[in-house]
Length: 121
Image 1 (tube, rainbow, N blue to C red):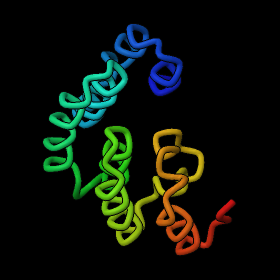
Image 2 (tube, rainbow, N blue to C red):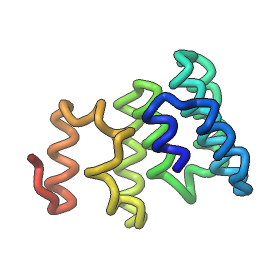
Image 3 (cartoon, one colour):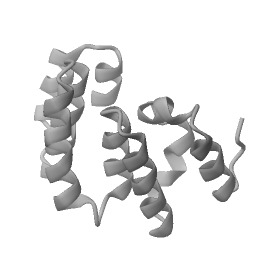
Image 4 (tube, one colour):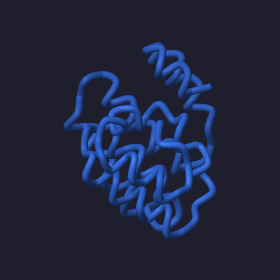
């Protein structure tokens, strides 16, 4: 739900919904996403680093999302590779995650899909 509101640029509603989320990892993740959506890329990057440090070992896919969101494709692919190596279940949503759309034109995107035995179209 929060993601839909962010995608629709309804940041106030997204913040209201995100405030209900009790898990600290999600709060920090949304902080970075909201900052990027507000156009504050520096704040988004600042929020991404502590998230990666604290939760990267558990949620590498989410760290990859954040790096994609803040325009850091090299780091996004690095974290996607970690996610793949760990066989993280969230990878099942890779092809329809809107956060990764900026990566679709990168040749590494098709290579990753191929490595996962997914269609590269």
